[in-house]
Image (cartoon, rainbow, N blue to C red; front, side, top):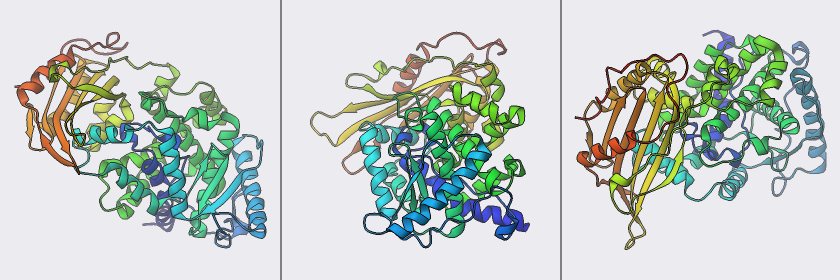
Amino acid sequence: MSQRVARGAAGAASAERCAMARAAACAAALVGTAVLAGCAPAAAPAAPRAQAPDAARPEGAAAPPPIAGAAPAGEGELDDDEARLTKEEIARVLARLAKARGLPVLREVRSRVLTRGEILARVRSHVEREIPEGVLDHQREVLAALELIPADYDFTAGMYRLLEGRIAGFYEPEDATMYLVDDLSETEAEETLAHELVHALQDQSFSLGKLLRFQPGDSDRLAATHALVEGEAMSAMFDVLVGSAFQMDESTLRKLVAMSTALSSVGDTPLVLQESLGAPYTDGFAFVQALRRDGGWASVDAVWRALPETTEQLLHPEKLAAREPAVEVAVPTAAALGPGYRVVFDDVMGEQALRIAFAAYAHREAALGAAAGWGGDRYAVVRRDDPQDPTRRAFALAWRMRFDSAVDAAEAGKVLERRFGKACQRRASLGPLAWTTRGSDVAVVAGPYERRGGGEVSAVGTCAGAKTWLAEVMKGGVGGQAREGAAAGGAGAANQGRK
């Protein structure tokens, strides 16, 4: 491994602590950045750069900030001397980033250095204030029902545990303040400071707080905005720290992020969540770089004026240019499950999250190919409460997808078949899982299963019931036909999901 790549891997590993913070406070990109407003944009994996003295740094490069000498005093506040030093350094780096990015500095950026416990407390408070009760729990059920996390995995506790150990800093739009952890090395501090100050510039020009605010059922659009925010911050950061973001190859960055995650991940964090953590950075960087190659930062500015509406548009810039809309899919119903079952949460998965999920079932290339045919989707978490025992609840999941063509739907069906087989799968704890395709549509139902008291999980559904529910979900409304350019005809995998 070359010295350049080795330094890049080391930098990615250290700055991944910041990237991990996003999912810890923001659930997971896999089921949408539902609590994105609960934590401000975090730093991204560092770029590989050659070792050089300060005198040899490219024009505009940031010198390491004096974090080591800026220990927290009291409740995270700096004393006067340290505050002035940090303020001066922030102003210098902010000016360099503003010049590189072409955004104005409209006001100074405040900063605070906090302990990990103090930062975690801030994030918890923000999440509890901004995110409706039950959202994180229902997102856990989506992942559990699809076997993307263990059925007994404590999703919320796991994410906060991950956050506490890995966060390096974040910019908070709510109070226009940059927060840094008090134990960063000079390299980590340099990368974190540069990345977070790009977010400050974005906030001053585009009002990040409003753009990243949680909206029920809007996770795919929010994930696309999130990726733009992080991708731009990475691109501008690389311009300052490396000299040009175009010295970083996008495929190399993906490998470095994957390697750093594998080498330094928390032991009990499911792999699919780890994959979701880096997606906004790698996908966003590729998107912004494509825009810059086409028309420089002016092209990025144009996207801020007309944001992508789906992650499909983010992953395929030509679809953004065409403003190809998502197909509207109705919220799946649950009448077939019987009395007491009701939809308590619904959202859109989107292409980005779909390919992450598919990558848990098949080889990455097969997952990318299958997800690329996404046209629209909607899933619903269904719940039945026990009136006699409030600690006892039954859950189930219904998911309806529309692909661009029957061929694309069949390709998605192959991924599902590889993981779950053709017939209904009877699962001891999570209940039945069944799926089917029909033309350009794919539907999946999972459960019901029951959670009791401290988290004991047991199946309560049957494959016979799943078959009836699957037929009901397939009858649900889908807006319009397959989009222009989609292949016509039936899918060879049609109705293969049930026997």
